[in-house]
Image (cartoon, rainbow over all chains, first blue to last red; front, side, top):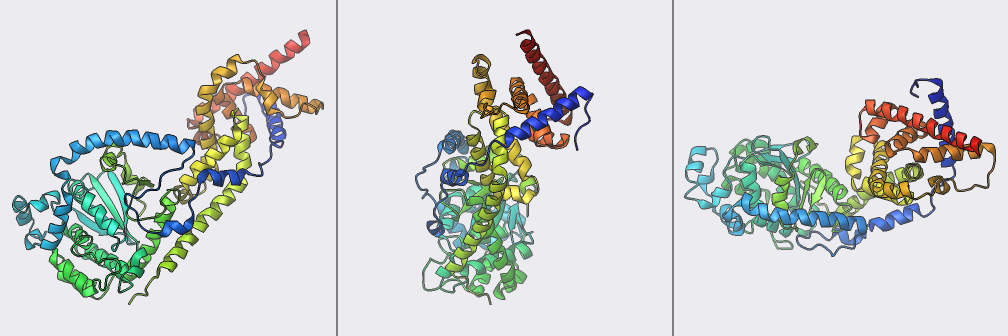
Length: 341
Length: 188
């Protein structure tokens, strides 16, 4: 497929150059230690300790090679800028999210019922907890079990990996959940929730993570178009009030999950579907696919695959870095094209 | 009801997934490392192996995304190496211009081989090194890697029109270099 050249001279020179290049290239062989050097440079962490899930705020001190250090420096500078804008974006009531979460979840208030939009909007002033989460977000389930929560088509899209049994995920939602829901409700952020079920074995039933994921899928599928219902259910599952403790004597049965769904305004159809375990197969397959994706994306991170993990544009975001949330929006360019559901 | 997935299942699943990544990446590394190393060297990188290592480190970082796009891995590697050399070149080009050491001395390992063919190769490579980086890129991608104009455009990050112009001007430059060298030799 060689180009046609303008004249004979060019062609002859090109041919001669090709010969010279090929002859010279052959002098350079592959260095024997190329792969060894490469592996050393990567410092791939030992697999054994990467499965000790999860670690919010527990990043090992870095031992990076020079160029990765340079990257980190850039990120730090960006994060510092991010802090400043977080204050602007989130406003003064952004900080107190811990309390809000517990009370919204435990109240399970009928006035949150999103099928009466007027009421919910009208009572927002009274029930101040809901201010951070105006019921405008809707949820859809992809064929692979990914749950997308959004209001319209925002330009910023992130994937969040969680295990329903993980206390670190609950902690994450307590810190950032209100911010996340607020941005979703305002149509600025779309979240793809991708659950994993690493922690099944640590639940009394041995299946809690998968069943909780299945319940989320069911609510998103049947009631996803009822604004706020999925968000409220997800919030409740990861609240201090309802999330089973790792290693405790009992967790939530499917009937319990159905009742919890009812308390946040899910439909009768969804409740029944949860009780009979409708989406278990999809949850199991989805969790497997999600684990695989999580591992692939986080394979180069020091902390390895862990939940919660936030991914934007195919890259894991360091949520232990202050300012990360505001940064999502500062750098949010055309993220919708990254949606490979 | 569902089968309970125990932690060891999950761990082995993850190790399997990771092993898959590593196996496919290792294959690419073994196949392409030397090509990228040679490319970096032809483009005049100060430390070609460093460029090659860095190129693969970047590919590894983006591996899941790269493999899902399919079939463009070579091009990605070539483009990354080219860009790395370019950004190095910004620092080094000034030195090169004023330090009167023929780059070809480093490029051509052995001057012992005195066959006419080799001398001639050396002259070509020395002439190549006189060219601007874009022209050198164009000629190396075109005549050594035998890329099409479209492929070159994606590696060099420019339009097909620019590719054509870089090749044509590169060749003219090469001819001019060789001619002046010949004249010099005749005069001596």
